[in-house]
Image (cartoon, rainbow, N blue to C red):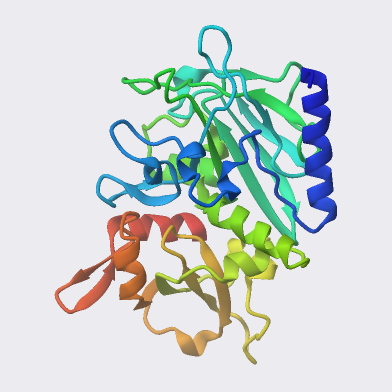
Length: 337
């Protein structure tokens, strides 16, 4: 098949998937993710480790380092052994951000796309790119499966990425706060932020592997995939009460808010965070739920979820009592800014 033929086939597959109620499309030609026992052919591990270290979650540094996305192994190389896999839009959407200065980020050259899926605004991130598609610019619309870049191994890390480990780092994220730049300037004064709201700290990841498998299973059952239900079904690490009647996350993601409203005026929200800090659901609360002047309060921690995924370090047990860590407090402040 010619290069043009492969591009047209990729676009057609992406559009067909969307038509079948499958909003997300694999971002490279690698399909091994759906083959049981073939995971080593899909995920690129870290140096000296096995394929699970290329998946999402607490998979690095003996479970204490978070990996926000998945690292997809290349399937095509040029005569010099460099990756040439096409990278395509994982869903219909628009180009939100392009970083073409590899030295400014651990991501190297990267692209962020914005999508509307199941009533939610969600983002995909494509990193370590060798090249960005000619003419691609912020604000352009792209269909699922359309080529946006070429896989590579760009990064600003000291050790770099070897030719053998060339991969696409791919994320599916929710935006913590559109006012991130102002929050960053106020809370991290003097520190550089080269990417505005598209700083990785402002993108809260959900597991692409789990999402792709869930979507694949729904296809086999001939039923549409629901991103909202997928997010709602994630394990809850903790519940936090926030005194913020104008909680912007709830206003931006109304489909993740409990429809049961208090009889009195809303004074804040009880938010349920998954182990990576995604507010998977929010419940409005009236003034009777709050006492004192504190702006937020930890209500409950699921010790099983913490044991399975401790690496975000949002909470810890101090004696017999669970408390928010400094990272947890910073995360809540970012969400509520």
